[in-house]
Image (tube, rainbow, N blue to C red; front, side):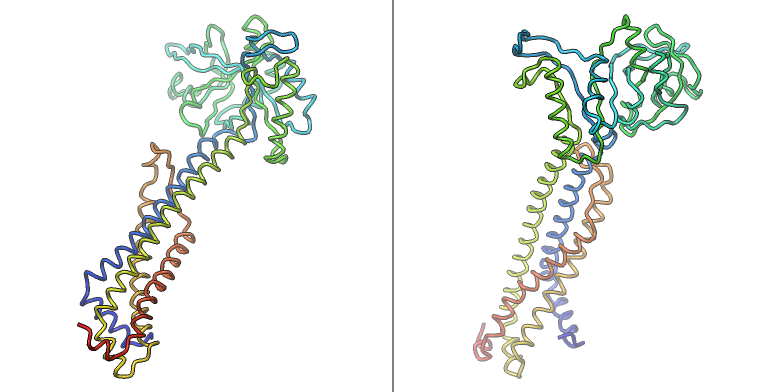
Length: 409
């Protein structure tokens, strides 16, 4: 089957039937190319979800206040729920086994000035642990610490782009900025993988913000980091217990969906990843359909090839060729064309994905790719089924009696 004469015959057949060979190869190459590209797009979609959540910690709950919609235990509906410093301490006291850190967040927007430069930025009153939830990377100086909270210092940590906007090429460390009429000393500059928006924030001690606001103890939200070792199931259980605890303390009905809101980042990430994988399976199913179409195309072409070579096969059998030899000749041609075309389509598909880069980010596809092993396996599967598609008409040809084949017109 692998003799020099067989290969010479195959190449001669290909040379004589260029259009037929091209169509066979094109069908196979297109099928595997579409599979590679679509599967790569599915991976790109998963990358988008990972990037969206990747700039912040994922073992985090964000707890926000709301307004009640139903009465509960003597309290009327339409109450505005508020958090205060005591809530932080109560959560620390009641959930030590789950809690890794907790920080309040007071969000404001204000005009910030330095000499002749000014701009409006988000001002966050937070605790030291806020750095971990936002995954801020310190470029210069330090982040807020416990002493800043305790002493209600007027220290500020600014984002990289805040420094660039207000100070230009100067070093912001040690300089004083006017934040809504109060002077703060810049003690640190951070960067954030979340992009420009995240790097135009300013953080100050939440106790200082409370002091500025008439010495209140109110906070807007709580950021709660749970221990990663408790896992997804543990995080879901912690979320449920935390929700029940806060509702009990603030007298919010368990059925009231608007009293408080808990955003579980880990749960959101898992749900979005599952959604992306379902889409990837659908995409892979569609892509696999193109491979099936390619296999059917090969089978149809091989049926035509066998019919075209009926007389030739009859002469071969009359001269003593065995059915095994006939099947081998036709099968080898089919596998050869399928292999060359399949790997060509695979390489072109990988090259297309590599050239995409960040061009599809507007369509929520980030750095599409396909694992080389997956691409090779898909190509080998196509080759195997291509061989089966060629075997069926080849076996039929091997059964034709020489006298019948020689009479064929």
